[in-house]
Length: 180
Image 1 (cartoon, rainbow, N blue to C red):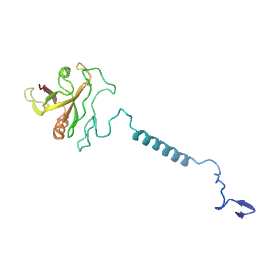
Image 2: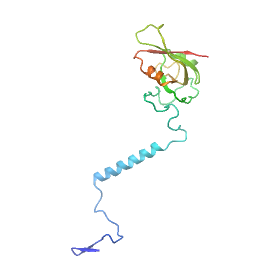
Image 3: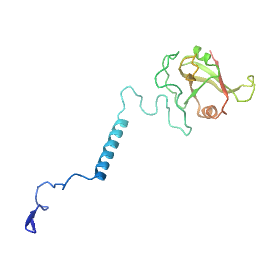
């Protein structure tokens, strides 16, 4: 110990705890709170519940250069013909499609194969273009009679087909032909 001005001060050779001369200031408290919040968020993100699929499986599919929009509709499952979504096949991307005629959703089930047609905006109904032949139906979301636009068909498409489907001009209408 080294005497300083007649008062003994703890030096490096002692085991006495170092005491703060008062409470930490606002900046220190803010940093501690931010670190604690970030650690809590990281722990929440890293802990995956048992019912959730691992990354790369399920609706999101593998990472790709093409962003895939989320399925439309409410967060809670809407009543409708859905009997359980199918997993996304390898090499495919999931694309939600709103049909021009939502009544077609009543006859569709996950696992069905459909031809996806598009009628570009401003063209006659007879000028439909085949966008994706034999597309796999992954899920049917919402009720067939929903008028709020919450019903959609979730299809597994090849990446180039998904780009075409997402890139159609606004006002275009989608239709499906059910395959046997």
